[in-house]
Image (cartoon, rainbow, N blue to C red; front, side, top):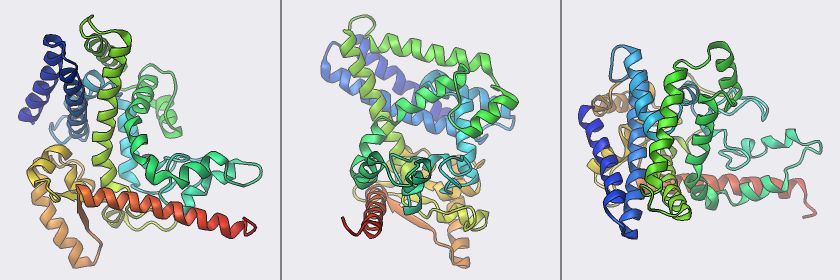
Length: 352
């Protein structure tokens, strides 16, 4: 972890230096992409520290999470922990209804994306006529095509939710609202200072240390932000998207739920395993991480062999795919939900 932290800071320093020492547009583009990749790698480090994989004392993990989350990425530690703990408890579990937040927050993506036909139709209960809105119909129909554009702007939403959480301007979910009312922020001062400092250094960098025009600086920021959203979501999207989804009454026991809703990522299609290991930051072993969330990433490869043999022994699906095949599986799953949604609409309204 000392190596990973040092390597990440070298990425950040390189991205900053490319802006500070160069006036070349190509260098600035490369800097923005490197910054996006830096943020993605920070996400995996913050993830490990906040899962308490590194330190025995949770306080140290939380403080490291504030550094890599709030200060370096602009993400609220508390916002992330609330969201991620819910995800680990019930991966790929649907909300009971469109008005509840008792499922996996990571697939609570309606009306933009639906991961099952039931979820695609869930917003009908919000309308007096019990029908799908024109917006829902459009988004579900084309979701296999809008998936990647949505990922590009996902980080903007995460930044917004983090800022609101840290400064008490609102909660991202009903569960987060309850937690904030009961406990408040665990580290209110550090979170607010960390996010303020993040936006300070980001503003200096995006302004080119005072040399960039506002439009040029905004383009730099958006390129870094959108590339990061894509780099992040490519990994955690492959971890669960397109895998089994469940309702509360049909979900299996804990370990089967974790295994059947999760996909491991392997090397393949020209991507060597060492690159996948670096890019995914331990989450290439997503199944194993979900079963043992406090296990340090460097031990997951050993754990993987044991979990795989255990699943084979008990006849439980253990799925792996490389970056290319996994992405195709996700898009095919979205397309199938779209097709089922359209077929159901036609069956309900045969006159169409």
